[in-house]
Amino acid sequence: MADWTDGHWVSKDGLRLHYRDYGPAEGRPSDGVKRPPILCIPGLTRNARDFAPVAERLADRWRLICVELRGRGESERAKDPMTYVPATYLEDLTALIEQAGLERFVLFGTSLGGILSMLITATQPGKVAGLLLNDIGPAIDPAGLVRIRGYVGKGSSYPTWLHAARGLAEVHQQAYPDYGLDDWIGMAKRLFRLTSAGRIVADYDAGIAEPFRVPGNEAPGDLWPLADAMKPIPALLVRGEISDILSAETAARMAAQLPQLERLDIPRVGHAPTLFEPDCVAAIDRLLARIEAAEAATA
Image (tube, rainbow, N blue to C red; front, side):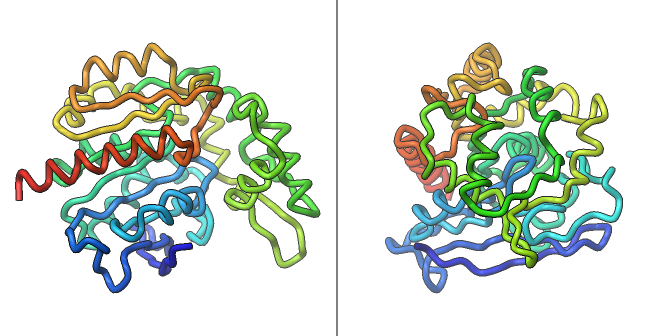
């Protein structure tokens, strides 16, 4: 298992935000090749642990900065829950990029993290070396938003990890029809935490649901105009074959508009793939090889 260090940055409104910093021992990759860091941005209810399997696999060669958005994991909770919106998250991540001195980087974004990755690509021209969008695109299926609105912020707690796993299965079984108990327990340990009172709860501020439940706040409007910024960038679009967030039509339109985008559909998976499915592991390796080649060509 790869080690990480805890990193922090400060938002414009004074919140202390957290990330896990994975990377080669003493900053030197095993093969000596210098690579841009990978900024990993999780989904709405997720945290840095969601990227742990990806980071542990890549950390001998790549630096991975796995962020926790405000109100998630070890990042401080917002005093005003109406700041739990994409515009503020983008402002927070822009502050991280500036404070960490990231001049060139790769973006891995799941769901909400993918929306933010598209916004960063458009607002940080010339800085994004590559892009992975996990089950998200410029258009979002309304059916998926209705489903998410139905469970986010409900505040369930469980006495054991087994109970937490079963609770997850009740909500997400349709998205992962082939999961067994071990898979659900693994997901529970990525998404939940053990409190000092001995209860297991979701590792986010329930207040993130307040703006999300206001129609129009789920996503920042029409994102198709951002496609131009993504055209010259090596990219990978991962889609769950039975996703209710990213439709096959949207994925096809993205593939048609973005000449450097590889599309991968993960069979019998909904929203969102884990990124450590075997086909996805191979596709990520292809993306990173393309990024390395592009960076070498412009060095």
